[in-house]
Image (cartoon, rainbow, N blue to C red):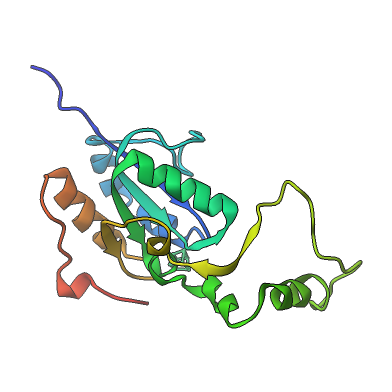
Length: 181
Ligand code: SF4
């Protein structure tokens, strides 16, 4: 009998803190059971540099620079289902607090007037990704299929949504699992 092909999942962190990925890992031993049905593609948990064809893409973090836009579009092009994971991906979260100021004001506050800054200067290295004027939720850039709220979403939320998708069902979070903190 042929083995059922594994569901391919990719994950990435854009302008996020990796807290959502830590919560994903907090599935603990349930993650081991999940990995019997799932194969990880690009993710901080693998060393794969580009997102290949996948069934599900999980995006943590909002969009703050040109590289984020590039990575997000690569995920959208390659993932059948794209999920915004956590407050930063859904509405910009903490990084979007800079949207109340101009980019120039933020750079000066950080690199020129910041406490303890020595040799103040705004970095201009060509290797640095170009910052966007504002931090965006990912749905400003690409189409998003599902939203997983929380900062971060709990391991149970991940399991609930991924479990449903693995069974080919429409994911629905029970009220008790929905939180925004
Ligand atoms: S939603 Fe919260 S935990 Fe997730 S990346 Fe943003 S700040 Fe971190």
